[in-house]
Length: 418
Image 1 (tube, helix red, strand yellow):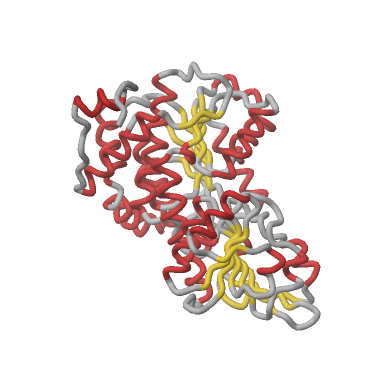
Image 2 (cartoon, rainbow, N blue to C red):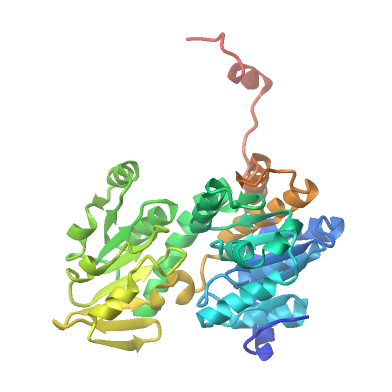
């Protein structure tokens, strides 16, 4: 078994943390139990590029319980939990290639190492694995049945590949499942983003002005949580419908240029590039804090900030302070990478429970059908989404009504009027 791990001696601590997360993932536990009995993934090779966290560990263990051969690497250099890697390698005999803080070259070396298993299914978080497979290891594409994608950013990239006619196999957009983005993106990202900012800065949110860039599901959740802690929240958007929704939700909406001089904390959650850039840094107040919770660290134009600054100091563990020529200080959190994973532990396990249930069942769906799908990006089948919601409700002890025959007939008819 090949692997790259910081320290196998961390395995015991990692196992305890994995088990703690497992207690809060009842849906995945149910799937794990069934997979152990039925082995629906028997002999299937899965290459996964995901955040290597306690929750992801439970997904990997579930896939292996289903009979799969799994190889895992990190989808972000600062999201890896080294004790989790050690536990997966030592206790579960899963090939993991991930070291927290790895450089860019090592990051791609690890992706290539995972692809060397000759995957039949890919599991991605940002589409770096898929794009590397297409660009560098095209000979392996013939053996791929299909794949899954976990993030908004990744889905955008994969849809671009589809539109350009280069996507070589079908992908299920797990990110777009209702049981994923309604909960993971809104409640998971919302809470964990604020958690990462507070851990890295120890700032008081109450009374501060927080500027949220992007009002998709992640932006909604972050804005909601910041307001819940007493912050005055400003939303910056380019989509008029989302901007209007933010206004109707009670937030102040203004342009990025208007927000730049008044914000205390700036958070990007857009999936786009150079959302905060030179003209914003030039207008920010002394001591402004800048963080990103979009998938890649391109949302903040860090190279431009580097050029503008006369000095840079690592002033706290996850805070780089840039001093501009006029003396103003701009504080960048987590090197511009996902702040909820760079400085905190990512989403709570109870939220990832549904996301990784989608990953497991979507993989089973691809394998059972041997794909048979076109080379496109597909939504999660509605029956999988509904089943996960049902299982989660069952785990929470919540019951729902069912339609009577009379109600079903009424909804299926057109004759009835007033």
